[in-house]
Image 1 (cartoon, helix red, strand yellow):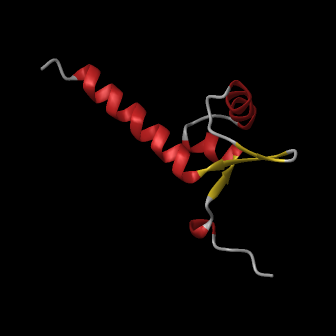
Image 2 (cartoon, one colour):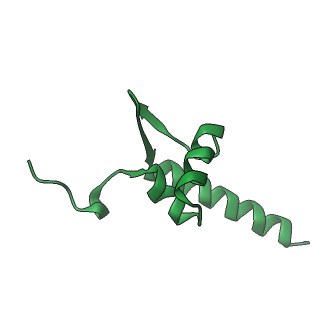
Length: 71
């Protein structure tokens, strides 16, 4: 079985998702533990769905724009 290209994968590892947010590996796992990262648990395996992470980031960006816009 061949491994899919990373661009085709539907999930990130916890460190990959954290790195996108500027977090260290340890900080990424702590964020996942706190529920700050959306995780999918398969047994002991933790994955971060790309769609959920990007939606979370998009929501945060929208909120920061609304707060910055005084109109």
